[in-house]
Image (cartoon, rainbow, N blue to C red; front, side, top):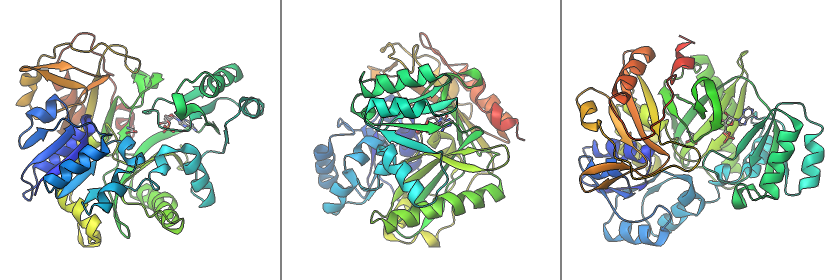
Length: 426
Ligand code: AMP
Ligand code: GLY
């Protein structure tokens, strides 16, 4: 069977790499892909954007694609799964209605409140004056969020009332995040440590995937701006057996039951971004309705089962008959970003050293890259995610950084402490 992966990031390179390992799979197409997917064994790029729903549908129909996996949130929030389902094409992801769990923070906050899923206290606003009045009643720090999709960047943690008021003003009146910021959420600050918990969900069954932890801040020590994610590890030592059960009971099961009850049964990858307090209390920071980037890279490095079969089983309602097998090793992925990320970045810089890494056990997942002739050049903010397995997290970290240190491009920046928080819990 042929597979179509939609998207162009490190997540999609990892999905394509994993799908290509399936014995049932013939060709893996990636729309539009990157230099990594262009060069991967059994994988081919097609020149269609991830948001060209008509083009993608036509391609899938003409090539009789046996399974489409949607990487990023935009096509999901545009209704790609609804369109593929209407055309009787197997497509793994949530419907447009279910994708609101990610595409609208006010939808997901109201949903959580209604169904008793733990999350920070909040209010949502479309007008500045009431937002400013509410800000003046909250203690510091507090969090201001754009309601819509902002690639992980529409969140400001304000340390002063002035900063909070400025953020609200910039979003509601200054167009800081375009339409995404024309409604905002103001919420209480939660302290603790974050973990990512992702499940593969069919209409009536789900399986939890291995836990992971992202590193969202741009700089070492979790300093600097919020980004799409600068590196990830799997597993997260915060999620021990007891915490795993608690997450299923307090978050995943009420979310799946609540979505069904509300008439939007959830299918696809359900990603709960969690804040776990030092005394073990759980809160949901956000839902994503797709696999995380960069969490996908270390999580899929550890998945021994066939991803394509699991997605099919979830579409067919036979997920409960599946055992998911994991490599007991740990994995660490380090994002190598271009100068300036998360702000705009230069493009077109040649990347060297990729060959040196090939034999070392690490895997270089490409994100913002493209091929110019045979040369791989930078083409985005997050450029690569260098990922390695190891006997434990310190070993995986050492291997990932050994590989990352061989790779160079102009202005390259990467954190040097990916995995340290997790290692601190061992
Ligand atoms: P979100 O897109 O809602 O996940 O927010 C992005 C990042 O901002 C999260 O991964 C956290 O690091 C941080 N964040 C969001 N909401 C809160 C909160 N209520 N308290 C503390 N940190 C938060
Ligand atoms: N790594 C966070 C995300 O994919 O949104």
